[in-house]
Structures are given as C-alpha cells and as structure tokens.
Amino acid sequence: MGADLAARYPEARDTFAEADDVLGVPLSRIAWEGPEAELTATNNAQPALLTHSVAVLRVIGSRLGGVACAAGHSLGEFTAYVAAGSLAFADALKLVRHRGELMHHAGDERAGAMAAIIGLDDDVVADLCERASGEAGVCVPANYNSPGQVVVSGDTAAVEAAMALARDAGARLVTRLNVSGAFHSPLMEPAVAGLAAHVRDVPFDNPRFPVLSNVNARPVTDAATAKEALIRQLTSAVRWTECVRAMAGCGAERYLELGPGQVLAKLHRRIDRDATVQAVGTVRDVEALQL
Image (cartoon, rainbow, N blue to C red):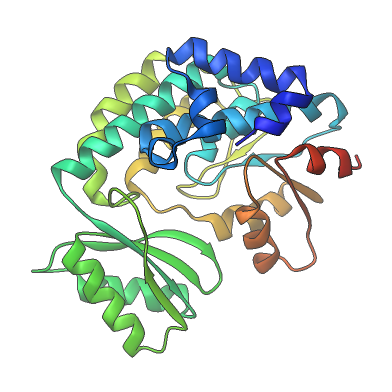
C-alpha cells in the first residue's frame, strides 16, 4: 500500500513519515511490508487506508482543478473531509486509529457477522433482514453498495438466517465476509460514545466543498454537521448508491478514486454506466492521469 508512491514522490514519502510520527507506530512498514494479519487489523487498516489516500491526494493535488464535491465509503468519509480541508490529516489519523480500536472492542464485546448479497433489490434485502431478526438477534442492511449489491450486518445467527432467506429468494451470490465485527449495525453501539468524545474534541472547519454523508447522502457544508455525520455513520448503513447519484447532482462530471485498489470505481460504473471514473493509487495510475 503506497510503497511505490513513496519511492517516487517526496509528497507521498512525507505523508507516510508523518503518519508514523503522529501515531507512534511504524505504519509505513506495516503498509509496505505487512505481515497481512497486522495490516488488516482494524486499528492499522483504517489509518493505512487514510494515509495511502492522502498520499495520492498530495501527489496530484496541484493538478486538480475545481472540485464539485467529495465522498468516501465508510472510513473513506474521514479522508473526504481531509480532502475538503475540514479535518487536519494528523487529527484524522488519531480519530481513525481510535475508531478502529473502538470497533474492534465492540466486536469482541458482541460478536457479529457481515454478508454480501448480490442479485436482489434493496427493498427485498431490507425485508429479508427484518424477517431474519428476532430471536436470532439483529440483522440490518449495512452497505448499499450498488443496485443489486447489499451487505448485511448483525448478530451471527440472524445474518446466517438472512443469508438462507436470500438464497431462497434467488440471490445470485450470497457470501459471508471475513470481518472482525458487525460494522454499520446496532452492534457497534458500544463504540459510539467513545468515538463521539474523540470527534467532538477535534477541531473541524467548514469543508471547502460539499462532502456527501454516508448516512443520508446529503451534502455536508458545515463543521458541526460533519462531526455528527461521522458519529452516526458508525451504526448506520452506508448509502453509497445514493451518494454516487448525489455527487452528480452536485455538478460532478468526472470522478477519481484515491487510494488502494479500484473497488469504488467499479461500483460507480455499476451505478452510473456513463460516468468517467479513474482509480489512482499507484505510480502507474498517477502517470496515466490526465487532468
């Protein structure tokens, strides 16, 4: 994650060095060398994702023209506020590190599961979750990723019940996710107070351009709303399909996914087939970028 960028661009190298210094852990070594189990631990994965994305932003930032808006999927919403000048990178690092630790502890306190359901309408999946909830526990839609792709989250027995119902309903694919907790569900409630305390103590500025909230896909333009949106996000569904459509409503005509991989770019094309989307996470991506 980001090793080639750091080797080529001083801005990226300095970004990873800043993360190491702020967190007091060798995040750059973990991101570049692993081991994978250490990198994918929630408390490391979240700041590593943030750092890689901000490193790309700093490399290409001088080439960007007017930005209509920004959005980020779950953890990426913190990155979006950094990009919008609302949240300092150092403060964001500390917040997402705490967020990861709190989410991990919540998962330990009440074990849960998540599963991807592909090939059913959103309202059908929501109905299946409601039917699966009850004595088996709670199951809710956690990520509305694209039309026909929804991730559900909750107590393990309830999620497994929803998976069975989805198969019976004709889902094309139903698969359990390898995660350490039931993210974006009521099972994360134990983490809310701790995250709220950290978020409310951190200075936020009004974003320079709107940031679409995961919670309701509405554009956030002030610091107070940004803070509350990030807190609510912990137990709320990520409404990514709506966020993508709302970005077009803000006047966006071209989209860049900054950071590792191209998951969001692929989702974006499923939501809006005509959109111009490019993932930028490597030296090759940066060199191919035409702005």
